[in-house]
Length: 379
Image 1: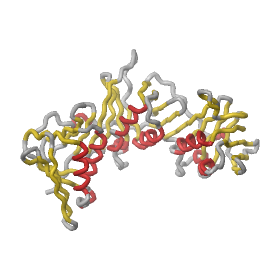
Image 2: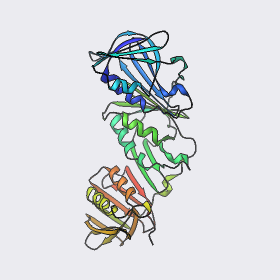
Image 3: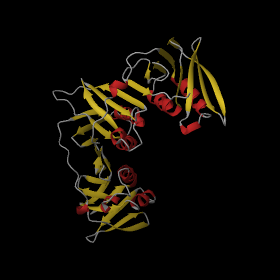
Image 4: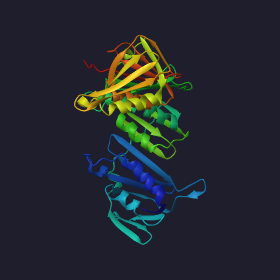
């Protein structure tokens, strides 16, 4: 195997596939990066058997040559050293060559590295997903769907199914839902698929979606999403991201969402977020960071944080409107701040159904984004 490649292109691909590589894998060869050269270009693969990422660098695209002098072949290089070597190479071009004893030479300018490679034949074959259950989304929309839900997955393995995001297509609406049983984040978008049946409901690990989100560029280029019973594939022009799915039944979250409210507050998102952020500075008690919200006359809201050993903070915020009953409620500042950041609209509507009932946060003008938080009992 032999080729000359642009260092920047190579570095970007290496960084992408490294997101799938774990030093804790039970299959030793998976601690390496598989490098395959063909006459069309170079493909890098990283995997920990839960997530697999392939990144492809074409020999030439749009009249720009990225890879040349190609002699086809493949090798597995140690992920512990290869990325650092590429990052520190002195020139824009890199020559990579392996001989029949799997000795690899990496040259750039006057620098020359020699690495011991491993047999690419021993690298596990990737499943080729052929499925009718696929659909396309603009990449930036997918990134938004992930960003607005994935933070609410559970970090505890006691209920593994809650560490993932539930994805389903119902009545031409694509739903993303995440919950850790103390809060819930949901986003839906219209999705029409011509002449195809329902997509099976699946649960994608939150970790996979977080890594995917880091790799994807903010663009309106389409990304194809294909589903099978136990895997999901995200495919763009030069990227192939495969993740296992979580087994089990996701809880019926629609039952958690109250259908009526007793107090409705409309307020500027940023003002509320900053006020809760300040109140949380002195509300570190029990590590829950609990703050209180109290509605008052004249569309005023009192936000306070209190920690007996430290002190307290009180702030008044003017809401755009407050309708319904007076309310005192306590909640996790972190959960509230996460929810407000995810909404991404200037104005929010918060619907309360009592001091100990879950409350809803949505944009004033968009029913498709929903955040739900369970309050905290503080007395």
